[in-house]
Length: 141
Image 1 (cartoon, rainbow, N blue to C red):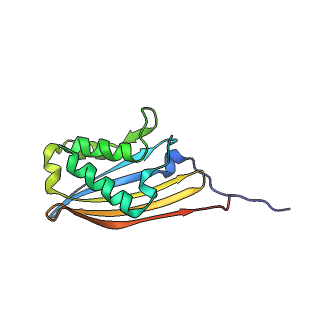
Image 2: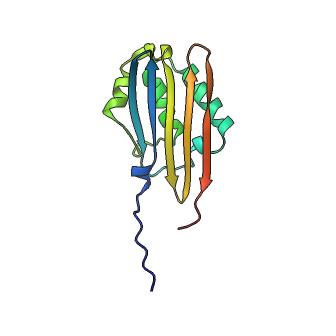
Image 3: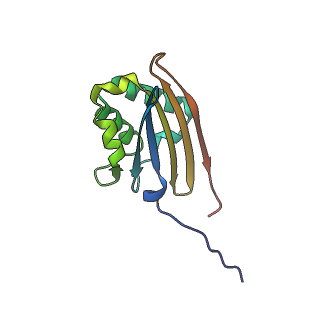
């Protein structure tokens, strides 16, 4: 007899992005989680798609609140399926100042056996975005 004892989590605890805003020695971080995403997460389709999408969100955001909301939408936001931590609210409170910060976005996504990671850096002075997005599929259920 074979007994399998795996630690199982649902998507509410295993899908998230962490936003870090960095300017000199100052760093502000916030984490956004996803509960039961309704659509596939755009972050994990391919790296070029992700970088273009995130750069567009950054450039089209007039303030930090719009930046966080834009990123939340990008990971599959639905009215009853997302949470913004208190730390992310500090990012939102920066207002328009966020454009002076370099932005780092790290994330992990897991749903229906599909997993992905994202590590992206935005240079505010050069208006450039670099990083990696590594999707993979876990068929070992």
